[in-house]
Image 1 (cartoon, helix red, strand yellow):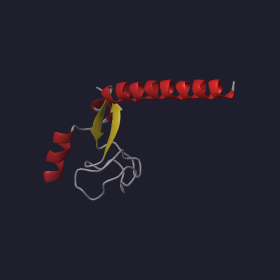
Image 2: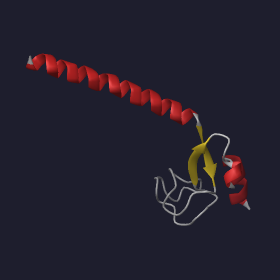
Image 3: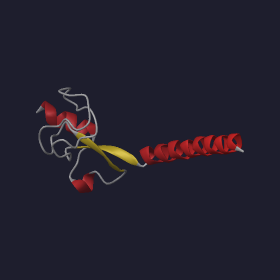
Image 4: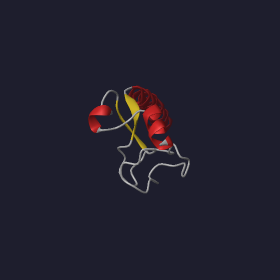
Length: 92
């Protein structure tokens, strides 16, 4: 009886991992990088200027080189920029 419960638990765990991975993949597809909207300490990953390489390390609000994932198509309405626009702004 115990081995059947262990096998059932293991099977349920494996199946739930598959659903989580699928949900994450779908979530990534519905998002885009939006530059210039991240508040200090709330960026999602490395910045364009290369001064850091990890999430949560931005020092200023709305830095042109910092980005966050937002729902696809909503970046402009939030006052953000594409990567190319951010790079052009940084060159000035």
